[in-house]
Length: 261
Image 1 (tube, rainbow, N blue to C red):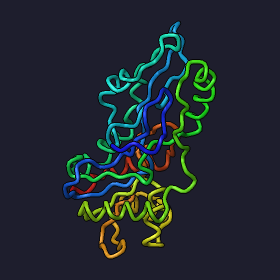
Image 2: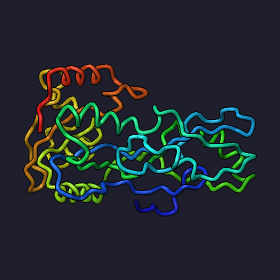
Image 3: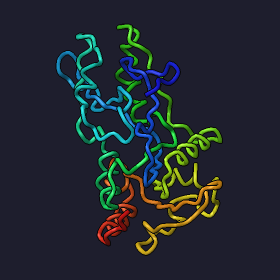
């Protein structure tokens, strides 16, 4: 993975660009939103919990499943007076990757080896809750102990531009995939609609059990492709704040034995 500029997580790990490693032809191309991160539980020198889940490193591969979290966290050096970092609970490390495998790929008869994975934003971003944790627990002691200033960017207001869409299209063509799986509203809004204006959000494909999870034909530039719009892993696995409507629709889709590739 390539480091991005001089961006750093709390405690100094570089922010890296997270992209598909296996570049051999695939059956499907999956487009998500932005890369996740490795999260650690930060406790002080007396064992008191300071932050339950602090993003401290880029995920080691796209749609990471949470494996080797302890090994990654253990490589981060922390001054004993500041405390210690432990792997955060499993719910914070790799849940989207697990949901992708269990609730989308496996029901379709697919594995990671059949899939080319991509995100609109190919790096970790700081969401509001992470920003608050950094400001509350990390920044007050950073200068005192000479800790690196965190510089992970916030979630951008625009999740793609022409340059990024061109990069994604280049990956899509390289993948030779014949089906594009879109995870939630954002890949539709920030990628698909620039090539086919019929759809701007997931509900534009239909938000009932008769329409959800159906295949659609479209053309992206000169490439004919089948589109499968589905809810984001956050919704289908009830990860944090999520929509009951999309969870229920996805459950019905699973119950109806989805098509196999």
